[in-house]
Image (cartoon, rainbow, N blue to C red; front, side, top):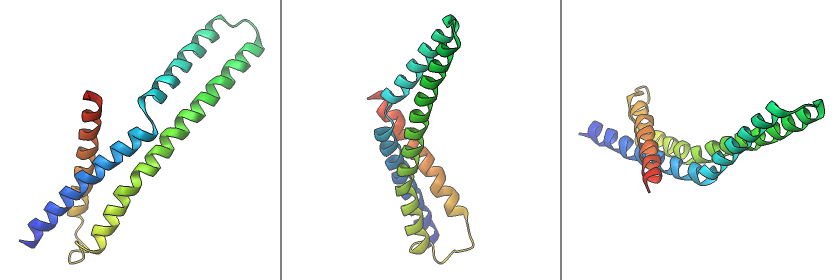
Length: 129
C-alpha cells in the first residue's frame, strides 16, 4: 500500500511541478517575444537579399545578433527560473517521501514523466484560452 501511495504522490507532484513550469516559462517568455524575434528574422533576411554594400550587411548581422541574443537569453532564463519548482519538489520528495527506497529510481521516472505531461497540458490549455 505504501508503494502505491508513494507512486501516486510522485505522479501528483510531477503534474503540479510541470504545470508550474509551463506557467512560469510562458510568463517569462511570452509568445509576443517569439513573434518579435521571427519578425526581426524575416526583415533581416529580406534586407540581406536587397543589400548592396558591405556596411548594410554588417548592420543587418548586428541586428540579427542582438535579436538572437535577447531571444535566447529570455528563453534560457525562463527555462532556468521555471525549473526551480520542479527541482524543489524533486528534492523535497527525495528527502521525505521516498527515503525508504533510495536505490530504486522508478519513482523518479514517473515524477519527471508526469511533469512533462503536466507542462504539455498547461501549454495546451494556455494555447486554447
